[in-house]
Length: 207
Image (cartoon, rainbow, N blue to C red; front, top):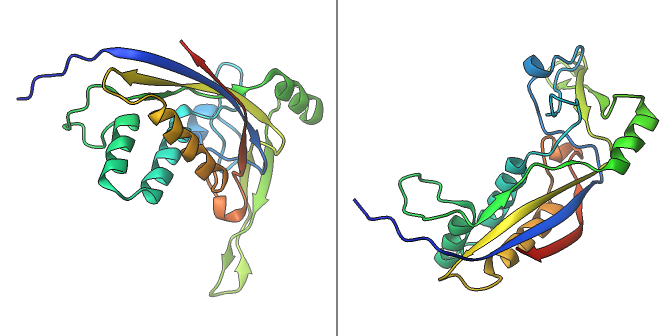
């Protein structure tokens, strides 16, 4: 059994940012938990106020996947595993370098959505048909809940550097991953136009 390393943090950086939803965003939640009548596929929400959220895990998972697709050298793969944590829990890794927080609606977007959709409403419902190719007919429509285009979320992630880490290396890695994500999509149904986003107002502060 390997002995655990003595982990010492030399620097922590907090990165605040906003996400602007450019096309309808669907990150699925549980219909059983949120109890949305008539909606086949609801979005994930904060159960205390019914507002949609973007889970930090959704950002982390998609950014990691895109980086793994684009990066091929063993050195690059090792850096991704250091930043996000090893895929195999048995691998020796003293600490995940990047921590993603859940994103919440900005105050301005919260007010805008309720002014447009009504008090207590923050999402739109989109009806979608599936075509039966054998019969050439559309099936009964499914009702998909989405966060409307123009909505803005705010959140943060934390980057931690150990004594042996090079300065800025993980920040640069995440910056690159966020650019990949802007040119891809977040959430479900990206091939149908959902989930285009843009990162704005990125601000880094050394803690």
